[in-house]
Image (cartoon, rainbow, N blue to C red; front, side):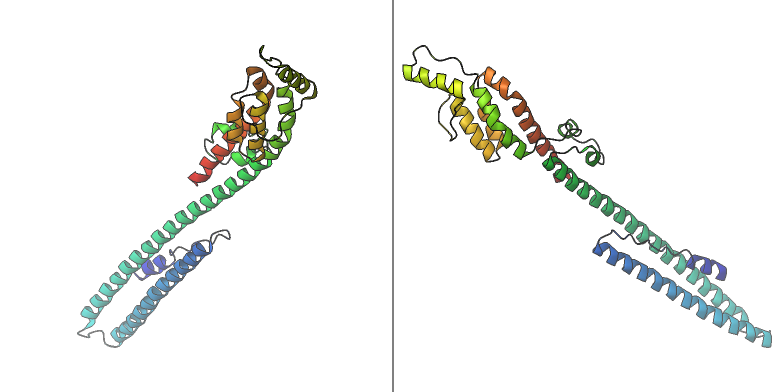
Length: 267
Protein backbone atom coordinates (compact mmCIF):
# COMPACT_ATOMS: atom_id res chain seq x y z
CA UNK A 1 0.00 0.00 0.00
CA UNK A 2 2.84 2.40 0.77
CA UNK A 3 4.27 1.71 -2.69
CA UNK A 4 0.86 2.47 -4.25
CA UNK A 5 0.66 5.87 -2.54
CA UNK A 6 4.20 6.72 -3.62
CA UNK A 7 3.32 5.73 -7.20
CA UNK A 8 0.22 7.93 -7.12
CA UNK A 9 2.33 10.91 -6.03
CA UNK A 10 4.42 10.58 -9.18
CA UNK A 11 1.30 10.70 -11.38
CA UNK A 12 0.41 14.33 -10.58
CA UNK A 13 0.13 16.19 -13.89
CA UNK A 14 2.30 19.22 -14.55
CA UNK A 15 0.68 21.51 -17.13
CA UNK A 16 2.98 22.86 -19.80
CA UNK A 17 3.20 26.64 -20.08
CA UNK A 18 2.61 28.16 -23.51
CA UNK A 19 4.40 31.52 -24.04
CA UNK A 20 1.52 32.77 -26.17
CA UNK A 21 -1.35 32.19 -23.73
CA UNK A 22 -3.03 35.20 -22.19
CA UNK A 23 -2.05 36.66 -18.85
CA UNK A 24 -5.32 35.34 -17.39
CA UNK A 25 -4.59 31.82 -18.62
CA UNK A 26 -1.01 32.07 -17.35
CA UNK A 27 -2.28 33.07 -13.89
CA UNK A 28 -4.73 30.16 -13.88
CA UNK A 29 -1.96 27.79 -14.93
CA UNK A 30 0.21 29.04 -12.09
CA UNK A 31 -2.65 28.50 -9.64
CA UNK A 32 -3.24 24.98 -10.97
CA UNK A 33 0.42 24.05 -10.65
CA UNK A 34 0.53 25.54 -7.15
CA UNK A 35 -2.58 23.57 -6.12
CA UNK A 36 -1.14 20.34 -7.47
CA UNK A 37 2.15 20.94 -5.70
CA UNK A 38 0.38 21.72 -2.41
CA UNK A 39 -1.86 18.66 -2.72
CA UNK A 40 1.03 16.33 -3.39
CA UNK A 41 3.01 17.95 -0.58
CA UNK A 42 0.19 17.34 1.89
CA UNK A 43 -0.14 13.72 0.79
CA UNK A 44 3.60 13.25 1.11
CA UNK A 45 3.54 14.65 4.65
CA UNK A 46 0.72 12.30 5.63
CA UNK A 47 2.62 9.39 4.13
CA UNK A 48 5.84 10.34 5.93
CA UNK A 49 4.00 10.66 9.23
CA UNK A 50 2.38 7.29 8.73
CA UNK A 51 5.71 5.69 7.84
CA UNK A 52 7.32 7.16 10.96
CA UNK A 53 4.51 5.84 13.15
CA UNK A 54 4.70 2.47 11.46
CA UNK A 55 8.43 2.37 12.07
CA UNK A 56 7.89 3.15 15.75
CA UNK A 57 5.25 0.43 15.90
CA UNK A 58 7.59 -2.11 14.32
CA UNK A 59 10.34 -1.21 16.80
CA UNK A 60 7.89 -1.63 19.67
CA UNK A 61 6.86 -4.99 18.29
CA UNK A 62 10.46 -6.13 18.15
CA UNK A 63 10.92 -5.17 21.78
CA UNK A 64 7.60 -6.65 22.95
CA UNK A 65 6.19 -9.15 20.41
CA UNK A 66 3.39 -10.13 22.77
CA UNK A 67 1.92 -6.66 23.25
CA UNK A 68 -1.87 -6.70 23.59
CA UNK A 69 -2.41 -3.71 21.24
CA UNK A 70 -0.42 -5.16 18.34
CA UNK A 71 -3.36 -6.43 16.26
CA UNK A 72 -5.51 -3.36 16.89
CA UNK A 73 -2.68 -0.96 16.05
CA UNK A 74 -1.83 -2.87 12.89
CA UNK A 75 -5.46 -2.75 11.81
CA UNK A 76 -5.56 1.00 12.49
CA UNK A 77 -2.43 1.53 10.41
CA UNK A 78 -3.97 -0.57 7.67
CA UNK A 79 -7.16 1.50 7.67
CA UNK A 80 -5.28 4.80 7.72
CA UNK A 81 -3.04 3.70 4.88
CA UNK A 82 -6.04 2.63 2.82
CA UNK A 83 -7.69 6.01 3.48
CA UNK A 84 -4.51 7.79 2.44
CA UNK A 85 -4.38 5.73 -0.74
CA UNK A 86 -8.02 6.55 -1.48
CA UNK A 87 -7.48 10.26 -0.82
CA UNK A 88 -4.39 10.30 -3.01
CA UNK A 89 -6.24 8.57 -5.84
CA UNK A 90 -9.15 11.02 -5.67
CA UNK A 91 -6.93 14.09 -5.48
CA UNK A 92 -4.67 12.97 -8.29
CA UNK A 93 -7.68 12.25 -10.50
CA UNK A 94 -9.08 15.68 -9.66
CA UNK A 95 -5.77 17.27 -10.58
CA UNK A 96 -5.71 15.33 -13.84
CA UNK A 97 -9.24 16.47 -14.68
CA UNK A 98 -8.41 20.10 -13.93
CA UNK A 99 -5.24 19.88 -16.00
CA UNK A 100 -7.11 18.31 -18.92
CA UNK A 101 -9.81 20.98 -18.75
CA UNK A 102 -7.18 23.69 -18.68
CA UNK A 103 -5.31 22.21 -21.62
CA UNK A 104 -8.53 22.02 -23.65
CA UNK A 105 -9.41 25.61 -22.81
CA UNK A 106 -5.90 26.79 -23.55
CA UNK A 107 -5.97 25.00 -26.92
CA UNK A 108 -9.33 26.60 -27.74
CA UNK A 109 -8.03 30.03 -26.71
CA UNK A 110 -4.93 29.56 -28.84
CA UNK A 111 -7.05 28.51 -31.82
CA UNK A 112 -9.31 31.53 -31.31
CA UNK A 113 -6.31 33.85 -31.12
CA UNK A 114 -4.96 32.32 -34.31
CA UNK A 115 -8.27 32.90 -36.09
CA UNK A 116 -8.46 36.50 -34.86
CA UNK A 117 -4.96 37.06 -36.19
CA UNK A 118 -5.94 35.38 -39.45
CA UNK A 119 -8.94 37.72 -39.78
CA UNK A 120 -6.68 40.71 -39.17
CA UNK A 121 -4.21 39.51 -41.80
CA UNK A 122 -7.03 38.78 -44.25
CA UNK A 123 -8.56 42.22 -43.67
CA UNK A 124 -5.21 43.87 -44.28
CA UNK A 125 -4.73 41.94 -47.53
CA UNK A 126 -8.24 42.71 -48.80
CA UNK A 127 -7.92 46.40 -47.97
CA UNK A 128 -4.45 46.50 -49.52
CA UNK A 129 -5.61 45.00 -52.80
CA UNK A 130 -3.08 42.16 -52.70
CA UNK A 131 -3.64 38.38 -53.17
CA UNK A 132 -4.72 36.59 -50.00
CA UNK A 133 -4.75 32.87 -50.78
CA UNK A 134 -2.46 32.08 -47.84
CA UNK A 135 -4.46 34.20 -45.40
CA UNK A 136 -7.70 32.56 -46.56
CA UNK A 137 -6.35 29.01 -46.33
CA UNK A 138 -6.73 28.87 -42.54
CA UNK A 139 -10.52 29.18 -42.77
CA UNK A 140 -12.84 26.22 -43.32
CA UNK A 141 -15.22 26.68 -46.25
CA UNK A 142 -14.57 30.41 -46.81
CA UNK A 143 -17.17 32.46 -48.76
CA UNK A 144 -17.06 32.23 -52.53
CA UNK A 145 -16.87 36.02 -52.74
CA UNK A 146 -13.40 35.73 -51.24
CA UNK A 147 -12.16 32.53 -52.86
CA UNK A 148 -13.06 33.93 -56.29
CA UNK A 149 -10.63 36.83 -55.92
CA UNK A 150 -8.07 35.39 -53.50
CA UNK A 151 -5.49 34.83 -56.25
CA UNK A 152 -5.65 38.38 -57.61
CA UNK A 153 -6.92 40.42 -54.67
CA UNK A 154 -9.67 43.03 -54.92
CA UNK A 155 -9.31 46.59 -56.20
CA UNK A 156 -8.72 49.16 -53.51
CA UNK A 157 -11.00 52.12 -53.01
CA UNK A 158 -8.18 54.39 -54.17
CA UNK A 159 -7.88 52.39 -57.40
CA UNK A 160 -11.61 52.64 -58.07
CA UNK A 161 -11.67 56.36 -57.32
CA UNK A 162 -8.67 56.98 -59.58
CA UNK A 163 -10.05 54.96 -62.49
CA UNK A 164 -13.61 56.28 -62.47
CA UNK A 165 -13.08 59.66 -64.24
CA UNK A 166 -11.54 58.08 -67.36
CA UNK A 167 -14.24 55.43 -67.44
CA UNK A 168 -16.93 58.10 -67.05
CA UNK A 169 -15.54 60.12 -69.95
CA UNK A 170 -15.46 56.99 -72.11
CA UNK A 171 -19.05 56.16 -71.15
CA UNK A 172 -20.21 59.69 -71.88
CA UNK A 173 -18.75 59.48 -75.38
CA UNK A 174 -21.21 56.69 -76.19
CA UNK A 175 -24.11 59.11 -75.97
CA UNK A 176 -24.83 59.75 -79.65
CA UNK A 177 -28.58 59.93 -79.75
CA UNK A 178 -30.16 63.38 -79.45
CA UNK A 179 -33.95 63.66 -79.33
CA UNK A 180 -35.41 64.85 -82.64
CA UNK A 181 -37.20 67.69 -80.95
CA UNK A 182 -34.04 68.89 -79.19
CA UNK A 183 -33.21 72.53 -79.63
CA UNK A 184 -30.25 73.70 -81.63
CA UNK A 185 -28.52 74.63 -78.41
CA UNK A 186 -29.00 71.15 -76.96
CA UNK A 187 -27.74 69.58 -80.19
CA UNK A 188 -24.68 71.80 -80.13
CA UNK A 189 -24.03 71.03 -76.47
CA UNK A 190 -24.30 67.29 -77.12
CA UNK A 191 -21.96 67.58 -80.09
CA UNK A 192 -19.36 69.49 -78.09
CA UNK A 193 -19.54 67.00 -75.23
CA UNK A 194 -18.97 64.13 -77.62
CA UNK A 195 -15.98 65.85 -79.11
CA UNK A 196 -14.38 67.03 -75.88
CA UNK A 197 -15.70 64.47 -73.40
CA UNK A 198 -16.70 67.42 -71.25
CA UNK A 199 -18.83 66.38 -68.31
CA UNK A 200 -20.30 67.73 -65.10
CA UNK A 201 -17.99 67.43 -62.11
CA UNK A 202 -20.60 68.44 -59.53
CA UNK A 203 -23.65 66.23 -58.90
CA UNK A 204 -26.49 67.13 -61.27
CA UNK A 205 -30.17 66.32 -61.18
CA UNK A 206 -31.84 64.51 -64.03
CA UNK A 207 -31.73 61.27 -65.99
CA UNK A 208 -29.15 62.22 -68.58
CA UNK A 209 -25.97 60.20 -68.82
CA UNK A 210 -23.96 63.20 -67.71
CA UNK A 211 -26.16 63.76 -64.66
CA UNK A 212 -26.09 60.09 -63.67
CA UNK A 213 -22.30 59.94 -64.02
CA UNK A 214 -21.91 63.11 -61.98
CA UNK A 215 -23.86 61.63 -59.08
CA UNK A 216 -22.10 58.29 -59.39
CA UNK A 217 -18.71 59.99 -59.29
CA UNK A 218 -19.69 61.97 -56.21
CA UNK A 219 -20.68 58.73 -54.50
CA UNK A 220 -17.39 57.11 -55.48
CA UNK A 221 -15.50 60.08 -54.10
CA UNK A 222 -17.35 59.65 -50.82
CA UNK A 223 -16.44 55.96 -50.73
CA UNK A 224 -20.04 54.83 -51.25
CA UNK A 225 -19.75 52.15 -53.91
CA UNK A 226 -23.27 50.86 -53.36
CA UNK A 227 -24.78 54.26 -54.16
CA UNK A 228 -22.52 54.63 -57.18
CA UNK A 229 -23.51 51.26 -58.63
CA UNK A 230 -27.16 52.04 -58.02
CA UNK A 231 -26.80 55.25 -60.03
CA UNK A 232 -24.93 53.52 -62.84
CA UNK A 233 -27.59 50.84 -63.16
CA UNK A 234 -29.87 53.38 -64.84
CA UNK A 235 -27.44 54.12 -67.69
CA UNK A 236 -27.95 52.94 -71.23
CA UNK A 237 -26.60 49.53 -72.16
CA UNK A 238 -23.87 51.13 -74.29
CA UNK A 239 -22.67 53.23 -71.35
CA UNK A 240 -22.83 50.27 -68.98
CA UNK A 241 -20.82 48.17 -71.41
CA UNK A 242 -18.03 50.73 -71.21
CA UNK A 243 -18.25 50.93 -67.42
CA UNK A 244 -18.70 47.16 -67.07
CA UNK A 245 -15.15 46.33 -65.93
CA UNK A 246 -15.19 49.13 -63.36
CA UNK A 247 -18.63 48.12 -62.10
CA UNK A 248 -17.51 44.48 -61.83
CA UNK A 249 -14.46 45.50 -59.79
CA UNK A 250 -16.56 47.69 -57.53
CA UNK A 251 -19.06 44.87 -56.96
CA UNK A 252 -16.23 42.42 -56.29
CA UNK A 253 -14.90 44.75 -53.62
CA UNK A 254 -18.32 45.14 -52.03
CA UNK A 255 -18.88 41.37 -52.04
CA UNK A 256 -15.45 40.70 -50.58
CA UNK A 257 -15.94 43.24 -47.79
CA UNK A 258 -19.37 41.79 -47.01
CA UNK A 259 -17.92 38.27 -46.82
CA UNK A 260 -15.07 39.55 -44.67
CA UNK A 261 -17.60 41.10 -42.29
CA UNK A 262 -19.36 37.74 -41.99
CA UNK A 263 -16.09 36.02 -41.12
CA UNK A 264 -15.19 38.71 -38.60
CA UNK A 265 -18.62 38.51 -36.95
CA UNK A 266 -18.22 34.75 -36.57
CA UNK A 267 -15.10 35.18 -34.47
